[in-house]
Length: 222
Ligand SMILES: [Zn+2]
Image: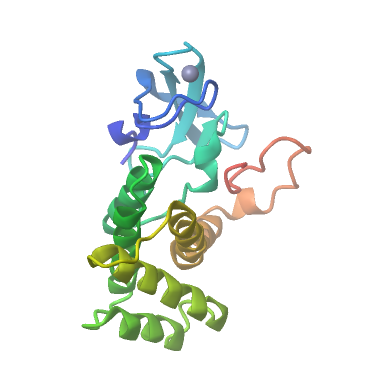
C-alpha cells in the first residue's frame, strides 16, 4: 500500500496545531536515487500556518502502510513505530488520541488492548493477559527486562477499566504509553527494519551518509 489518507491526520510540526488533518496537496511523487531505487513522497500543508510538510511513504507494493519519515519531524516522531500490524496500531493510536484529549483512564484500557493484540500477533491468546505476557517473555519475543513494565501496563489498564476510587492519572498513562512504544519497537520495528535491510544489500553496504543527513534505508531521523 502506498499512500494512505490516514497519514494526513497529524499535528502540525511547525505551529503545533493538534487534533487536525493536514491538507493533502500531492502524493506518490517519485524520486529515484543514484542506485535506481524509487522513493515516494507526499506534500501536505497546515490549514492554520500554511507551512508544508513532506511525508515519505512506501511504493504501491509496500507491505507496511506506515510513513517512512516526516519532514520536519514533530513531536509525533517520538511515538511513530514502523512495521506495526494494523490491528495493533489501531489500539496504540487510539491510546494516543484519548491521552491527548485528557482521558487517561481510556488510554490505559487502550494500551492494555494494544498488549493483547501484540501478543495475539505472535500466536499467543491466553485467556488472561498476565499469562500472555509471561508467554511473550518465555518464548523470547521480549527480554526479561520488560517483565515488570508489562505487568505495570496490565495493572494500569485494569484500574482504567474498572469503576473504583482509584483513577489513572495523566502522568501514569503517559509513562505506560512510553513503555508500550519501546515494547512495540522491540516486537515489530526492529525485526521489520532488519528484514528490509536484508532485502537491500546494496543500500546496507553504503557508507554512512554525511552527518545531519539520514542514512539511505536507515531509520527515520528523530
Ligand atoms: Zn501549522
